[in-house]
Image 1 (cartoon, helix red, strand yellow):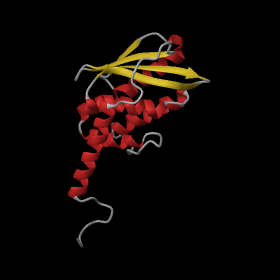
Image 2 (cartoon, one colour; image 1 turned 90 degrees about the vertical axis):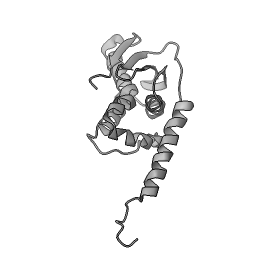
Image 3 (cartoon, one colour; image 1 turned 30 degrees about the vertical axis):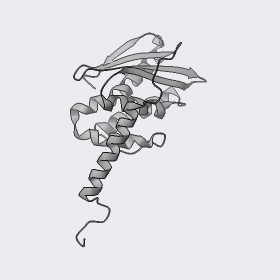
Image 4 (cartoon, helix red, strand yellow; image 1 turned 90 degrees about the horizontal axis):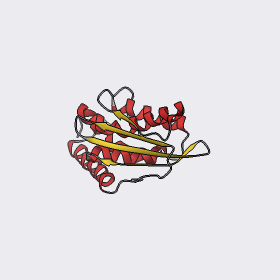
Length: 171
């Protein structure tokens, strides 16, 4: 087609990409990475989204100042579970400051405050970009990240290991 703008996608390409992203989200939902409890975790924090009923608990175990193990458990929609799975992959091995910065960046991307870009540690994260079109679903995608950030803040304030809870109504 002579009038196509270079670099743009056709409707068919967009539909194929949307299907691929749905497949990635459902794969993380069906087979989430790092799901489960960590006994003796220094960070234990709960989050919920009362709008849709998503509930997650994030666990973090530190070694040499880094998140050596990060896991989650909960009952939530596919977007929330997939995002939780991706979050654990993104922050494993990072210092608390680095993990907090990654969480802040992801939340800013989901809120359209900064351009969306794939995180090198988790290329699957691109699958969540389309969620930004649906503001009510952004809270589903950011719940685990908000909960992790809250857990880091609590840990750094000397309240780590205590079960804290954050609600996603204002995030």
